[in-house]
Each structure stands twice: as C-alpha cells, then as structure tokens.
Image (cartoon, rainbow, N blue to C red; front, top):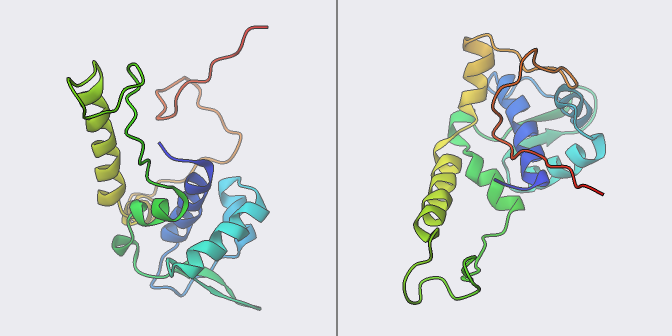
Length: 165
C-alpha cells in the first residue's frame, strides 16, 4: 500500500496518538521505536521530517520528547503518506504497455482505478484518533515485537513468496 518510511512514520505517529493527553506526555524517539520494534535511527530521522511538517512537536532536554502537533482526530494518515510517497503519475497500462485512458480500457482498468481510489479514501478518512480510542477507551494493547498469533489470520500485507533456486 505504501513504502517502509510511510509505514514507520505512521507507526511512530500511532504511538504518540495512543498516549495523547492534550500534549502533556512526550515520548523520546527511542521510546517510540522500542514500543513499535523499529530502528532507532530511522524513527529519529522520520520524527525530524514529521516535526518540520508540524505533525509532531519536539522538545529537547530533560522532560523533552515528541507529542502530536494537533489532536489525533485532526491528523489523517494521508498527511503522513504525502510526506514520504510520491504520487504515481504514470499513465502506462499494465496490460500490454499502452497508455491508460487511450482506446478501450484494459481487462483490469476499472479494478485498478477502484483500488487507487479506495486507498486514497482510506488514507484521507482514517485519523490517528482510531489509535487513541483503541488504547485509551477500548483497552487494546499493541502486540510486542516477535510475538506470533497462535493461529494464522489474514494480514493486510501481501504474502511473501520464496524464490526457488
């Protein structure tokens, strides 16, 4: 759906949303990274970018750290994605190399348009409030890194296939 930087930035922002209390509680980059099982250096770098975009506010020194720049319900996932993703401007059709929109639509054209529209709507309509509510009001706890479900369940991620030698 989106790249590793976007995924990591959303994970960091979601952690800040979980502890949102009006901006009083601040977390360090290390605390955020450890809570999500993410690389410290990458989280620190992404927080700097998020801070420049005013999505998070950082304070140095003792008692410092990061908090969201606005309430969780005022920040949508699309704002984060726009910082790290570039809009695909390609008009090449995956069904034969032609130009999409010229001539008869290809066999999967309508489904591709629907998918792109759905992802865009999801990112725009989903705010970080969902993470705050999940933890603070519903009592859900994020799963620690390395913990596996006792039984398999469907993931939003594409399945990984192994290359045969």
